[in-house]
Length: 377
Ligand SMILES: NC(=O)C1=CN([C@@H]2O[C@H](COP(=O)(O)OP(=O)(O)OC[C@H]3O[C@@H](n4cnc5c(N)ncnc54)[C@H](O)[C@@H]3O)[C@@H](O)[C@H]2O)C=CC1
Ligand SMILES: CC(=O)C(=O)O
Ligand SMILES: [Mg+2]
Image (cartoon, rainbow, N blue to C red; front, side, top):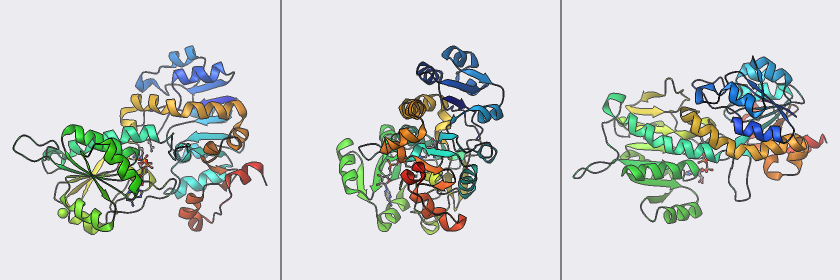
């Protein structure tokens, strides 16, 4: 198979779909790889390294999209990229379709086979291709929060760790999955006072064990969110209902009632955000203020530490990517229910139910089960 890797074009996005080491794996399995020039240059993966790994270098994205049978990316395709996709071509990347009608419509129109990293599953009920970036974003969320709590950056002037004689800052993490656990680890490491809310009791039990009682775990209710957010210095939004638009858990009223200069980091912004006042921001312009509360809502946080993130992402995407190339996409998905769960759009049909639930009415879409769409029944 001819695998294509275009350069990412989202704001300050320096990650790349395949590392040179991953290219070498594809080539060693008999595949060809075409990488757009300078695709990895910003993070130290030069064209020379890709050539040494066995790739050919394309001078434009157009060439990559025109020639490749499978496009491997990181972020969701931007409108001009969607328009270059075609029937018979596979797109393997993050999509986050539920909050994004424009992209959904364009991918349906393209006829391409579109696999979303974030909905591929594993045997333990996890999301193995989302997890590495959630680890990164969870850890970054506290770094970002601590930064924006500084007075000069719009915050209240609170040091999360406190000092002897002064109480530490309060961190509220809503959603105790991968992002939430990693946020809690970092916040605890800084010496903050950490509370995690989740609506899964088994998960709260696990968190209590993991943190050996050092973080407070609280069952997530409207009342708990209201109570703990009003006392927090930093709130991290880390909930997920896989593939679906994020539920709005913190209302404008509750945000208004927060302490002036407190900080919200809405990691769930890639699924539309879990705070009523959230709107996606970029690394170039990451924050804005509503009712004296600083909002950080960067939709591609791991892009900020693109070198670590690219390597972490490739560790997870490589085995599935190789299966798609080795067996062909349809056979690979039909033989692996977890990879099949990644299929969101195929030949104009939407094959992920939560996307149809979110956008079906607006776009006039109906749901086709992935297996049915692939078998052309
Ligand atoms: N902005 C960015 O750059 C990035 C964003 N993300 C996003 O972060 C979000 C979280 O991802 P993960 O931690 O991997 O998901 P996860 O599935 O590991 O954890 C989500 C947790 O939210 C909990 N939850 C669901 N509804 C809840 C509610 N009403 N109240 C409290 N908890 C609730 C679930 O029980 C689960 O424990 C996702 O939207 C993901 O796409 C991930 C990586 C990067
Ligand atoms: C998961 C995601 O949105 C990201 O890594 O950018
Ligand atoms: Mg206020």
